[in-house]
Length: 456
Image 1 (tube, helix red, strand yellow):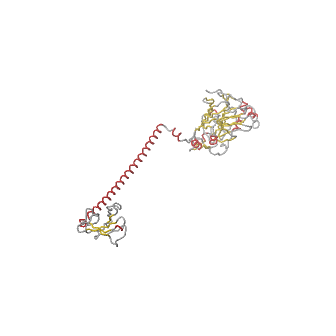
Image 2 (tube, rainbow, N blue to C red):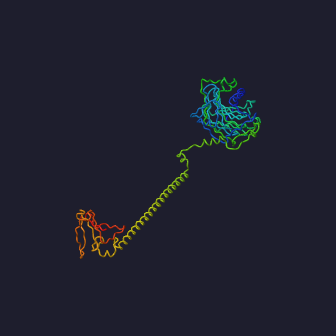
Image 3 (spheres, rainbow, N blue to C red):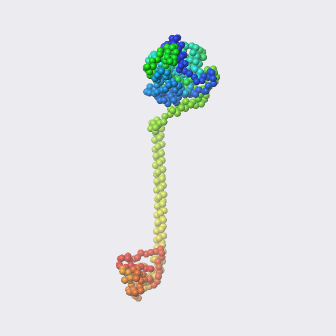
């Protein structure tokens, strides 16, 4: 629904340009000189004014300072002469600007949303602190102030200084629309602005601010009357609150170049490429998530795939472990078998050696010698062999032993020249030494019968 408009009285309307000129300016006018290209937004984004970084990343503070609270950015006049204002670091070449805000109270205090170009094309929303029923819409083309019939006031749903509303400007090459929330309140066509000569049509910045039109130190009488009267600074602070600004650039590119000094939209060249501001927005809009947040953002299908992948990975690990374990176990079994085979071969070799010795005479004795001995090759007796005996008390009980003609042993007392060693040995008359590889244990222990036998 379109609100009923209220046109200002001629006298008050005439004073409006003084207010506009006080709030707007240009660093370089392309109608008069060659100016740098204008950096483009080239996208759309909602700027939430809850932290200072929103302002410092995308806007310049051209006057005063801002604070931040539950109601967003606070543009506050705390004393006479203050006018906190911000200006975007980017331009839009046709587009839409929607600002959720609450205007400041106070007689003579002006809250404003301004779209401003380098050659002073301008589109406005304005509120007067002493007016709690209406908001003003206005426009200018190339700074033209020859007519003062452009400002039109529209009623707001309720007090604009006590309530937040969404104020929108939708701007194309054919028309400009002003909206309050979802209600269209005004439309300006291209041809209705002096056949387009006064129609705003060049790249614009976005400016938000508050200033005192009722300050007698900085304004003339006409401006003070337009603003509703002189401001009483004993009633400070006066604060405008801005929650957010959604800005869309209807053109895409990295910058806008002025092709000539005509000031027409056809003369503006769109430079292709990525917008620096758009890149910054993309970077800042990508939050760093925790692992839990990243997991929570995954779809059910993706989570299932992760589970399956994790299960497969675990199975692969277990399989690798089992493969390694079984291979090591197999290698160990093969090594054990090889070791057992070696032991078996050594035992077989030792047995073969023993059998060879046995066949040669059970310890190195020849077969003929064995035939003349008793059943035990080492403990048997014969006429041809003598045996040394060592008694339990050494040489004191040492004696020689021989055999008579019948083969019975005869003990002969050792002579005084016999060895006096505890291990006295009497040598055989026929010596057949044992081999180095064969060492037979004594038949009797050293203490088994008070003496021991030894063959050499």
